[in-house]
Amino acid sequence: MPHKKIKILVIDDDPDMVVALSMPLEANGYKVSHAANGSLGLKMVKDPKPDLIILDVMMETATAGFQVSLALRSADPESEYAAYKGIPIVMLTSIHSTT
Image (cartoon, rainbow, N blue to C red):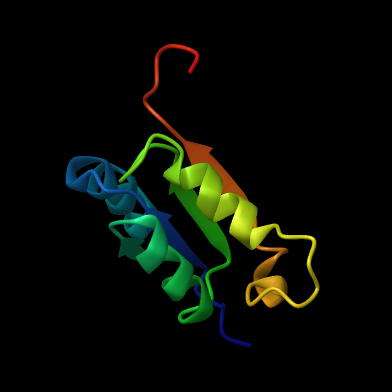
């Protein structure tokens, strides 16, 4: 049986960070896609449905990553993201102080 290629979605507006994350992941056989902001990331959660999301906290706003994660983890069963609630999210940030 062929090995399923694990899909990782990186949602980050910093191109350097995307490259730094993508290179070692792709070198180890993961399929990496990228969204440059939260709204595009939410669209890409639907297609291609990733197995893991690496999500930057600060993008177009200081809390954009939190807003994406809240949309994905909504308790509302009618949420358009209800089918994606179980996708693991790794929050990533370079914030060096408490906001």
